[in-house]
Amino acid sequence: MGRIEKPWGYEEHVLSTQVDVGDKVGMLGIRRLVIDADEMTSYSYHEEQSDIIYLEEGNAQIRKEGGIQELEKGNAIVIRSNEKHQIQNIDTQVAKILEISFPYKPEDLHRVEDPYAEARDDDEQEE
Image 1 (tube, rainbow, N blue to C red):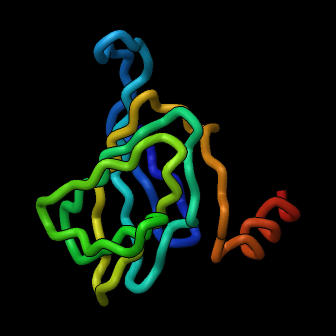
Image 2 (cartoon, rainbow, N blue to C red):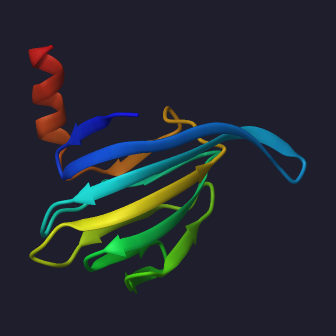
């Protein structure tokens, strides 16, 4: 589906498909996040979307309002809608994470803290 460069690494779209989950119909999105060594995503939340974060490779931790939780390879954590979260690679190698989202809405992202805000502003000015 394509690779999108990010300040912390890149993401690959693996799958987007319409599904029925209980009484809800919506898009299911699966993306692979490849986070460079010692990098992190923004601290953000989604109003409607919930995520399952599954660590495929590397070492990562999840920051949520309740604290920081280390994520072990082969394990997953659920991020519910409106739950602030951030993923950080805590290794010297890349971390590969599958992010399974429902209902998948790429525009449903609200950044609370963004370590790359300045770089994002520069990219927008170049366009």
